[in-house]
Image (cartoon, rainbow, N blue to C red; front, side):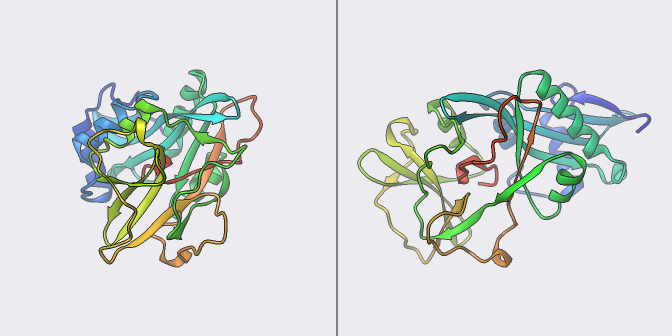
Length: 275
């Protein structure tokens, strides 16, 4: 689009500029704060945000960003990016900016050695990712009732949740986490949202922050316990699709990697930016 200038994220815009753009594009969202975006974009131990902003006549017109992720593929660790935030100012919509920003982001990520893009798309965004950005749909995350998060199955690609990453993940300023014990050395990480408790994943107690409370496992307070699960395993009862807060489609695009298609993913709530 003639006249638009593409600039790396955080090169010209400030966190406050992004907050203003998000509010103009989507309305107010309590989750989006200066502290949250700084945590997400700048403090991730796997790497700083990668993305682009579009400007026209000095105005921030659109924004697209990914954050680095390290996944374990067998004995190998590979670097990829997770697609997280996009916004276009109402005055600049329907001009193809999202597609162009995303393509520029993936080119930069590939040049820096990142091997794939993974995302969790909703019903509104999945069509564009599949038809315009060459993603593949791997499947859909389910919400299981009463299921403790399953361990990683042998052979599944999974997020590298080391000590520094877990401490960063649980420092998310937009959420409040608590633990329930799952054996002597392991804990389940939970968060409350409305009238539900989401059980997000398992972790060794020794790598968790000391200030997160660990309690006995209980399903009290009149709350429902739900566990994000992909793939949908076992005989658990899953929340019907029509009742899901949003359909969470797992999508993947390779960035010129020599690896085989990484379709055998293990994804839990800790792997998502929703919680």
